Amino acid sequence: MAYAVTDRPDTAGGPAPGSALAALRARAPFGWPPVAWALRHAGWTGPVAVALFAGLLRFWDLGHPNAFVFDETYYPKDAWSLLQQGYEGVWPENANGQILGVPQQIPLTSAPEFIAHPPLGKWVISLGEWVFGLHPLGWRVMVALLGTVTVLMLCRIGRRLFSSTLLGCLAGLLMAVDGLQFVMSRVGLLDGVLMFFVLGAFGSLLVDRDQARARLAAAADPGAVRLGPRPWRLTAGLLLGAACSVKWNGAQVLAVFGLLTVVWDWGGRRRYGARRPLRSMLRRDALPAFGSLVGVAALVYLLSWTGWFASSGGYDRRWAEGRAGLSPPRTPVLDLPLPQLPMSWVPESLRSWWHYQAQMYDFNTGLSTPHTYQSNPWSWLVQGRPVSMYWQQVPAGQQGCHSSGGCASQILALGTPLLWWTACAALVYLLWRWALRRDWRSGAVLAGVAATYLPWFQYQHRTIFSFYMVVLVPFLCLAVAQLLGAVLGPPGCSARRRQYGALAAGAVVLSIMACFLFFYPLYTAEVIPMTDWQARMWFTSWI
Image 1 (cartoon, rainbow, N blue to C red):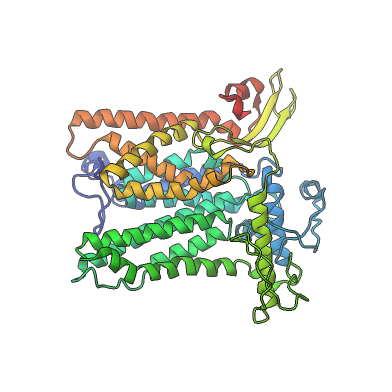
Image 2: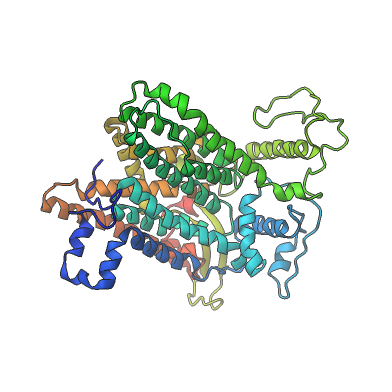
C-alpha cells in the first residue's frame, strides 16, 4: 500500500526526494542549520521528540498518590521480596500501612507465598526499588521508563511498517496520549512491562522480515537458499520469552508471532521466484523459526526462575523431596491425570518447579471470584467498563478542595475514548485492506490484535479486567495511523484532495489529544470538584 507521505528510504539517509520532509527542507525557514539537521535525521529526531513528550507526561509527579494503587498491593511487595531473598515471601495484613508510614517499617517474612505470575516483571519493578527504595516512586519508575521507551519503539516500528516517518511518529503520538497506556505506565503493575516485550518482539520480527527478503532478492535460487543467521528473530525469541516470564499471556503472542514469521518467509520465497515456496519454507525456515522463537523463549522462561532455584525457601521449592522420584500427578497443559512415572533422573528442583507451574495454571484458569470492575472482552474495544484503580472522596476544605459540594480524586484505567472508538473503525478498514487487497501491513497489525485480544474470549467465566488491553494499545495506534494515512490521500492525488485529507486527519488527531486532556485529571488522581468528576462519567458503566 502506498501512503501520502513516504520519507523512509531503505538504503540511503535523509528524506526521499519528493516527500513531505524533502519539501519542508526546500523552504527557506528550514534552512537554519539546527532545523535542517533535525529534518535530515527526522527518522530519529521525530521519534525521540515524541518519546520525550510521552516521558514528561509519565514521569511528572510519578510518586502521587502516595498509596498502593489497585494491584500495587501485590507486585511491588513481591518485587522487594525477590530483591531481598530471591523468592516471594509472606507479608502481614497491615504491611501497606507500615510501608507507607513514617518512620517506614518493612515487615517482610521468610515464609514463602504462592504467586500466580512468573517473576520477571517483578524483577523489573525491583530495579526501581533498588535505587529509590520501597516507595511509590521506586515501584513505578521502571514501568514509567518502559512505557516511555515503548512510545519510541512504536514510532520507529510505524516508520518501518509504513515507510513513513510521519505516520510512525503519529502512531507514537497517539499512544503517548492514550489514557490506558498512560495510566498503566504510572502504576507498578505487570501489564505495562508485558506490553514492552511484546511490542519489542513485533518490531524485531519486522526487521528480520526486511533482512530475510533482502537476502532472497539477492539469491540466485530463492527456493534453495538458506537464510543463515537471523539475529533479529533470535532477539524476538528472547523478548517473547521475557513476555511469557512476565505473564503467561505472552505464550499466546508467541504462537501467533511464530506463525506470522513463517508465513512471511513463505511469501518472501514466493515473491522472489521459488518454484515451490511452501515446501521450501517448511524445509528451510520452519524448524529454525521454531528453535529461534519457541526454543529460545522456553530457555528464557526457565532462566527467569533463577532466584527461585537458587533459594531454598521459595514456594514449593522442596515439594519433590520424599516423593520417591515420582513425577507430578498432573500436567497444567492438558489438565489430565497422569500415571506416577519414575522420574528419579529428573532433579528434584525441576519436579518441584513443574508442580508449582501446575498450581499456577489452576489458579489462573479457575479464578472466578466476582469483582466490581470485572468485564467481558466484548466491551473492551469500546471501553465499556474501565477499572477504577484509586478513589478518594475529598471533603470541602481539605487537600485543596475548594468546592462546597466536595471533591474526588481518582485513577481510572480508561483508554482515551475518541482514540479507541476511532480504532474500531480503523480495524474494519484494516480487515478490508488485508482480505481484499492482500495488504501485508494490515495483516501484520491484525496479527498483533489477534494475539493480544482474541484469546481472552475463551475466559467467559474468569475474573478479567479491561486494563489487560494495554498490550493491545500499540496495535490500535498503528491501525489508526494507517487509516489516517489513507485519509491524507494516495501519492499523485490533487492538491485540493491532499488539503482536505490533511484537515480531516488533523482534526481527528487534535480531537483525540483534546479528549486525553479532558480526562487527564482522572488519570492522575487530581483533586477535582464532584461536578467536574460527574461531567466525565459519560456512561453509568464507568462509575
